[in-house]
Structures are given as structure tokens and as C-alpha cells.
Length: 67
Image 1: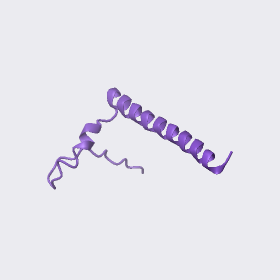
Image 2: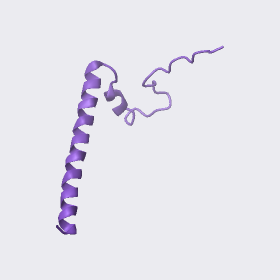
Image 3: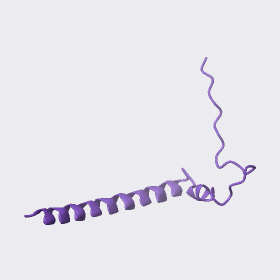
Image 4: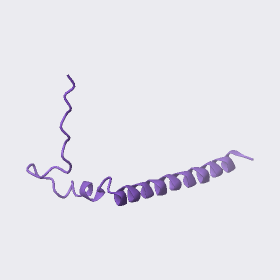
């Protein structure tokens, strides 16, 4: 087994791993949007609605006073 064959196998394995990571991330985004945890459509509109007086995407939670 020479170096070119090893590089070919490593390339193939890394390609398969990266495709798996990509598809798992897509499934994660799809599931979290279906559950209602996040609405990624709003985040996609940030570039389109980029005015200083635009409404914020999410409301900031009020800070808790720990005294």
C-alpha cells in the first residue's frame, strides 16, 4: 500500500463523514423548526431587513436581579 492509496482512502472516509455531518445538521434544523424552538426563517431575513429602525428578531429577556 503506497501513500497515494492511503490518501485516497482518507479522502473517501472524510468525504463520507462530512456528508454525514451535513445531513445531521440539516435534520437538526428541520426538527427544531418543526418543534417550534427556533424560526430560522426570521434569521434569514436579517440581511433583507437591515434598517436601523427595524424590529428586533427576538426580545431580550429581562436580567434577573440577584441580591
